[in-house]
Image (cartoon, rainbow, N blue to C red; front, side, top):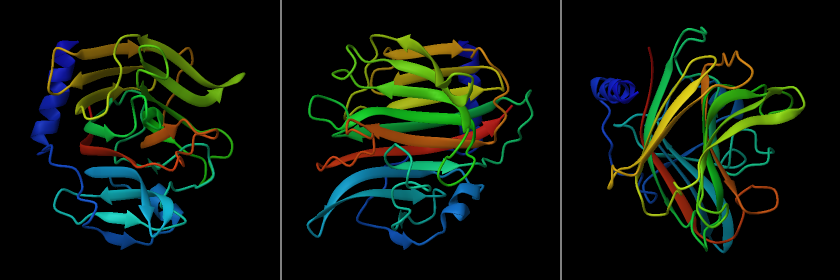
Length: 267
């Protein structure tokens, strides 16, 4: 298994991936794009930032995107600043039905990235969990009906005992919206810590590793196979869910999560 993650890291290096500093939120261009345009845009961004900010006396949720390392950063404007569909029960998100990878069951989709949070996890943080999906497919802008994907959710310590990471597959399951596996009970995500995440998934199984970059000895990895197979989408998702009643992350206090060095490939 260690060899697998060395291969993933090697793929990222071969693709010219560099882990650069998060987006400077003071420097961006407003982006007015229809939600269908974003959902179908077949580009894996280099950087994302989600935040809750006080702007002109009003609290707003913001989403910043840099599509390539040499590109400018864009700020999505309402009604698509929060997420493409705007109505589902989660906070800021970046969803896509396309990653440039094929959908064959034998194809292994690899995804690597780093992230760091501020004001999200911890006693006064707003965050419930941070979800990343691979092989995803969303039916429409509102996620009405069945949506699919396989990925992981990462929690902070105060909300759920010692915190944990679990693998999950949403929808397309009889009798429930999610199937999941609690994977670790002692690895809590913390604010101010840079984590590196390596994921690989075929149609039936996901293997993932989460590492504290400053303390590589703090590493958690697991392989999980759902009880149902056929996760055959081509897309991906980065999603924030928070402690407010509808998980929309509309708690009026500042917070931010930066996701960078994103690379998607296939084997």
